[in-house]
Structure formats: C-alpha cells, structure tokens
Image 1: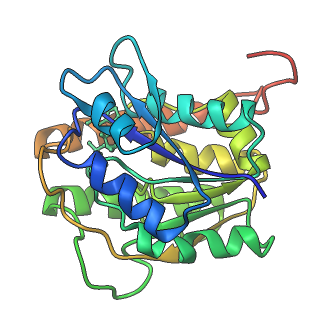
Image 2: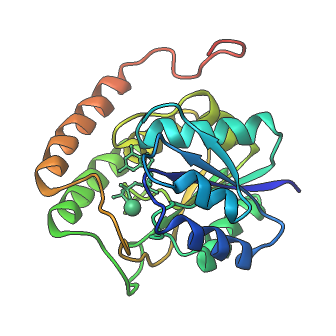
Length: 239
Ligand SMILES: Nc1nc2c(ncn2[C@@H]2O[C@H](COP(=O)(O)OP(=O)(O)O)[C@@H](O)[C@H]2O)c(=O)[nH]1
Ligand SMILES: [Mg+2]
C-alpha cells in the first residue's frame, strides 16, 4: 500500500525538520511531501535536508491551497493512503496510528483527530478559538448529521476516495470546517478519533482573537451558501 504524509508549511524552518523526523520515526515507509507555501525563510531547504520531497508554491496560497496541492500530488502519484500532519509541530506523529486505524480498517474514507471527543490532556487552543470551534461544531454537526467536535482539526487520514476529493476541490481560508461539510455532501464516510495536540513551539497561528470572529462569520456564510450549491460533485474531467 502506497502511503504518504502531506505537510503544509509556511515559514516553519524551526519546526519542519523535527516534524519530518517524527513522521519517519512513526513509519519509515511513509513518503513525505512538504508543501512550502511561499515561505520567506529556509523551510524548503530544511525540509529537503531532512529528506522530504518539497513542493514550492511560487507565492503564498494560504492553508487551503497548500493542502490541496499536497493531496493533488498524492492523487497524481497514486497513493492509497494519505495523512496530513501540520508543519508547525502541533500534530504529534506518534498518534498517527489512531488516525489511520479507521481508514485502514475500511470503516471510514476520512478520519480526523479531535481534541474534544474525549477528555484528553494537551493543547486545546485559545479561549476565543475554542468558543468558535464549539459554535461551529454545533452548526456543522447539524448539517452533516453526526457529532463533530473539532471543526478546525487538520490532523487527518484519507483513503484513495478522500484523496481524490481533496485533490479536486478544497476550500480556502479556514478550510477544515467547510471540508467537513464537503466530505458529507459527497457521501464519504468520516469519523473522529481522540488525539491530543501540542502548542506551537515557535511562530504563531494566523488566527488571532479578532480574526477568529471574522473567520467564524465568514465560514458560517460559506457553509450556508455552499448548502445551495447544486453541483456538489465535480464531474469527472472538469477541474
Ligand atoms: N498561517 C498559515 N499557515 C500556513 C499557510 N500555508 C500553509 N500553512 C501551514 O498550515 C498549517 C496550519 O497553519 P496554522 O496557522 O498553524 O493553523 P492552526 O493550527 O489551525 O492555527 C501549518 O503547518 C502552517 O505552516 C499560510 O498561508 N498561513
Ligand atoms: Mg497550527
């Protein structure tokens, strides 16, 4: 089975090397592609030194664009299983087995690591953001008809079907929330599994308190508008 880790990274020269080593320690057979999202630091060079394949975007596309690029690579290179691990070190690769398990067992097309599904220790995000995550969780759970607790988690594993979907279409800005709705509308089977996350060891998230409010309104709007989309499933051969 061909398997790959997709690592989006924007100015993560301090973190990306360790992330790569940790992924390798988890599973040496996992190929690693780092998507350098137009970084202005040495992210690409560091990733290459650590033996990862590096895709360098010519300019900054944002998380959604970086992630979609990685899945596109995984699709085109015919991988059967892909995991996403963020380049900032917040996702702990030693917990990848939990995220991969439901997909390997054929129980889900996509499994997402959640900080809130069980009472796990570890980093649970800032207060304002937690509030946003909760509110979005209520809305998203209603729409998709199953309980979703961690609407902004990017720690996930996908089978070929999931890879194909994310390669074709992936939302922007605060993409994980909309992606959850998208997955459901395409009738892919999704589950959450409990994980703990770590705090960023350096650099900072793009999402500050003010921005999380802004994003929340924007994402809610995007979700509601998305509900009226007729052509949910992109046709074969269109892009
Ligand atoms: N902030 C930010 N992160 C990006 C971008 N492109 C790719 N990334 C990577 O996407 C991952 C998630 O970003 P982050 O800001 O940590 O989001 P958060 O963990 O949800 O707060 C990190 O590994 C980033 O390096 C971008 O344009 N902005
Ligand atoms: Mg992060």
